Length: 385
Ligand code: P1T
Image 1 (cartoon, rainbow, N blue to C red):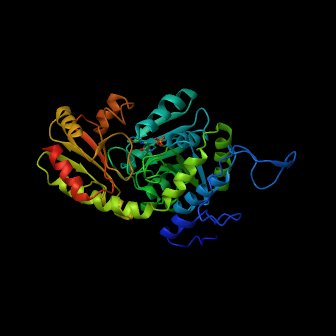
Image 2: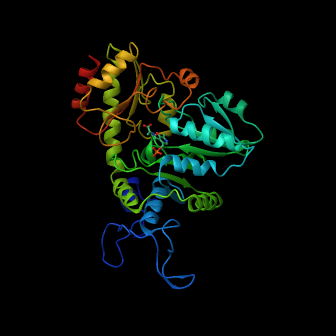
Image 3: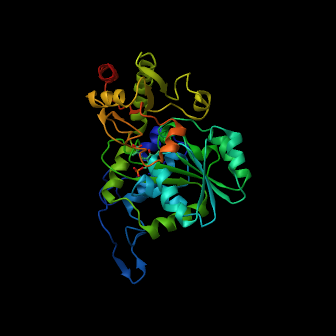
């Protein structure tokens, strides 16, 4: 089925990349659970496929679907979000310099600093909400600017168009980790960037049942280089995972609407609570980059970070008392999760960097799911006390 690229998001979510199976008419793209494909004679393949690490029809459908959702020409699926991140860093060589958003997922910080820095990649962390500091940190050898927005866990909003401009004028590529927003709320390629990265494990998957990553690009040459890395390193998702992600993106728009609606209500409840010191949510007028969020996002997402009044004891008490919110790493699933960044998701970030960012003992991160919001608020009310 050919889906017009100008079709609206919900239509593309359900149809892009997928056609009824030509052999049977099955409306869902089958799980082509095969590692290899028979050839007619040596080197003469029957269809388009020879080996599933290189390509597989179920993965091809997913990759086309992802590209369509981000408004890009090419999609590539990986075995995890960090595998997708690693593939981008592999575009660089020793001596190249990266400008890295100071507040990123702990695993992103770790792969840059503890895997690639020792191979000769130079890294400068910068607060990308400070445009002068970002400009000043650029060097002639800066080849990549890595943005995460909203950031994890501080939910800072980076102005993607301004950053793209800063990077482009210096000849650097720009990649945006769009995991927290999802393609439904934000499309960085349309704002002048080169690469969009996702942990599909989160909103794209949406059901906390599969690990995966994705890259979406427009440029044919960057796509070719990334596809070569995907083939050569082999960090591709399993076929059943590809099917699960394809199944999930069909409902992304419906889930995201409810995540946004619930999170807005939870954020307002928390902002008014006497035991909460501060609420970070891009949809609140009190958020320092609320205006930028309004400009570049179509909604504010399901993630909320709060400072409780008190310290570790108060955070622990809340995290151990919730009943509907589950104490777990990860985010973006239909079920609400809650976690302690300093001890859990960002434990691998050096303590001095954590302190500088404000990842303190009284910081708690919530992934607001799509349960009944009144039950969620009652759960938090009881847990905060
Ligand atoms: O877990 P994985 O699929 O490899 O994705 C890594 C990743 C990349 N980018 C962002 C913004 C992320 O939040 C993550 C994973 N994050 C968590 C597991 C977490 O709880 O924050």
